[in-house]
Image (tube, rainbow, N blue to C red):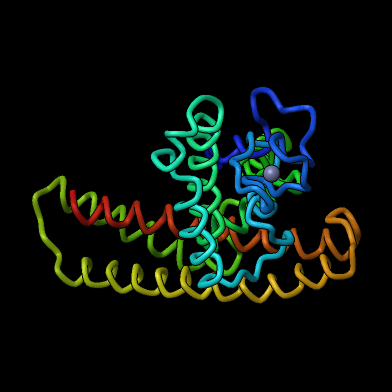
Length: 250
Ligand SMILES: [Zn+2]
């Protein structure tokens, strides 16, 4: 999670009135007034709220895209340049918020990570603290190698060691390279399947939102921890594939 993605919920100076239009007093949306069309100062909202969406993970992407282009036009700083002053400044800020929100919500992984972040679950921190805890207790770091990959990772590491030795000696073993490439393909296929698994939990999460249950409820916890697990496994495989690519290229 990058710092810029947090700007939506931690603005520098939140305005006092975040519910009505500064110009005509109507009830306002997060970005511009539906009644008079004036651009509004940015308010501390999350990306879902910015687009007027509930915090659900199944998102109608074509509808989101359409809304994005519509808002892009309306919030374009050039268009609001003649309004001058604050409105122009707000257009700039709102446009950059719009871009961050769109980029985050249209991507299935970023969207899930962002939702977990909103619910106070930070993936990197979690795995870091899990690693530290494992180190402190001398326990095997179970999170580090996902159990379903143990055998494959063990074998792959042996082959990568062998490859490194060969490279040092200036030898070329085509069958070894082919073996490693085969493992890599299998890992990439697993990586893709994990997205499907993640998407199966979106439905669970969306049902939790529909039932008005908090993320901290037993059902909420169960679903978010399954999503965290998938994302951790996916990150693990991504890093592994990157290492394999580096080894094959060197
Ligand atoms: Zn207005």
